[in-house]
Image (cartoon, rainbow, N blue to C red; front, side, top):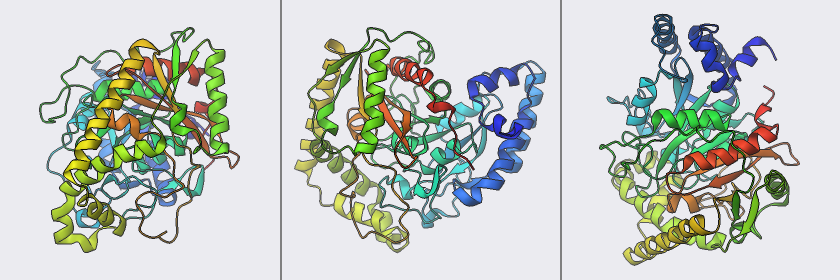
Length: 466
């Protein structure tokens, strides 16, 4: 790789000390990222809006601060991307009605990142209003996967995942209602960290489903994801779902042995639906963790069909409540799939919604109980479906493609923290990953396990050839 390529792919944890000790300038970093965005974004469509001039100005200010001895921490001078449903400058949500909307305020989590010295490179692409299924699209051009440009980058945090994997940002913020942080992270071969429900404020982030929405980071390494979470976590009274819980050091357990740790496998959720070329790298990862001393524990679990029956009524009903008036007024400007989701949400009965909510609580209680008595963390594939192709034509109006198996929603409707980690490639050379989940507000432990695996394997050192 050229020096510029080495610089844009340097992990934040390695780059930060170089910036702190003035061996690398934030201006040099910003110029490298801007140059790479200029070359690759026309191909990948990862950004809707690029703040080149603002980024250079902010980088010069960061350089001056650091020169004066006012170093703010490991994100100081680091360019990151922000999913375009966060209020910050031009905020389109990937939708035609908001193409020219400019936010007057900034999302709470972005304010926190800026306080820690992060630099905003731009606003990254999203499926329209974060409806995160492979049939959904945006008003704008589709984001392409850096590993294979004929493939999707996953959604709905598509631009954040693609930009981080391609070296157009060092990390970024996404959102997750049913898997929209972890699935695109898998598709692009990076780390996606969905915190505990309420850990990171959603104030200033366009909602999809209030009881399911989470905000969190995507990065190229577990350490970098933990550093991002450190900067944006914390209570916010502007978010009714925010948890007033202490914010620990999320890097505190990185490097600790996992020997003797109990890992619960929820095989009932993915048996029978996980494609063989995805399952092979996953099972190899399970064996690697066992080789490292972890104890594998088989746990009873809901099935994929049961997961869908629990997740979808809440998601669609809440989405309909949020969007119904917009659809009535400007529905002709919405993606037809997005309109279908709203229409279906209006058909969800109150009884169905309440039954799904009751079962959500039951599943959560069972998982928390298992994490207290039988295991320390849970493990699942992220998705059982290979990275899909970008459809040139609409496949027709569908809710979820029948051949799309994803195992992330269980940790959205239970609110448990979960992290996606790359575990290799399928026979087509496309990334595969798995997720580790844990007790509420115990992100440090899931990062510990993810980091142990990451450091034992080479996957985080692999980058797409662009």
